[in-house]
Length: 537
Image (cartoon, rainbow, N blue to C red; front, side):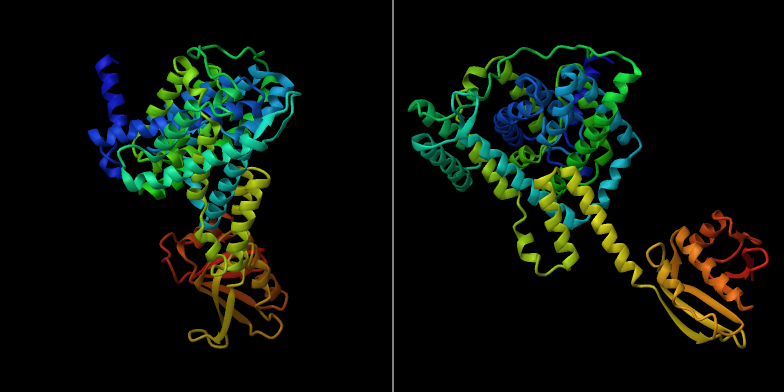
């Protein structure tokens, strides 16, 4: 591919397509995108450094991951405006691997993690994120807001000189709190005065200028670690390529890939709701996978979407891929050339920005609707919030989906009913009109709806207002027919829909005599001697 073709393809990634409801890159919008990217990059630095410490690796490992993952997902991801990088959800899983086997095993794991995510994207499994119920999403954003808030409290600790961190006190504490509140106030008031510059960037600039000019005795970015470094270099992870190594990294790679995709896809949905965009789940999976695969070969710890930074970007006006690309490039510039300046920024300014993200992320309306929605939905919202804070986002979402599914199954199981009436076409026969889905949850109750002892010789089960969903439903029908057969009575099934007809056929319990059976009106007799259901007309 020629240079011109590469440039053309890259430019197309920057220019959003109209069918995706993305914003066009005018000069004014480009300025907003670049400034928004700068704001995000400033917020990324302390986050990447902090997550590196959590994972037990050098700060540059997290910073390189933030740059590489952020750049690749910004160009190829499924949702313009999203920001990706090193995250705490992944770091807490990585720490055990690094402690036991070293950082090279981490790099190999990140490569395999990326390949798994690419496979999930190619198989288009990202679409299953649609199965996440809205109460789970509310619990997710609430829990995440709390997690972001709690993470910022660590910035109010200082070293005591003996290797321990203690809470601030005295003058440093009051100055820090004042700067945090000043940052929040500037973010709130700036949009009322001008929208030429993103409010968080204005706040960071003003607060940093005051802190530097007056040389205030407060923690700075440089107090966490130096962010100075060179370009990331390519290297194959220095691990033995054998089955023993694979067995070590595979469980971590699977867990990390799933956590990363769950967090990324939920962030994708959240950003989509704010920017009125749809689709892109499978594309995001592939982009995240490619980003992590590349990161593993360039000494990065891997990453996924970052909801906090994504909210900063969207609220600062970032709507296209340019903002994410700018954030990644600014981060690289900080590492290569501007580390001495970035290290002077007070952490209080960045904490104030993240506190505003917390306020904007938390679904405050969920507190009001807890009294309105069904109790089961309220329980799911609270449960997902608590598990997110206590464990991690992926576990919380899985728990929420399982509980929601169980609640749905329980409610659906209660909908199975049967109304008995005399048959209009077959003299002496009794018809049971079945209502509701017949599946594993309702199978037991279904069998209790009939009276084999007192019913007439012929009983017809009419499924006009019902459908058979699974094997448990088939087994329930056979169990009912078997009970009637014990008393020398027979059961007929009527009005099976075409999909139910096919389900019976696949189960080997239905001998189809005529492929031209209508969608409804099929009658099936139970033949006790054959021990299976046979078709009749």
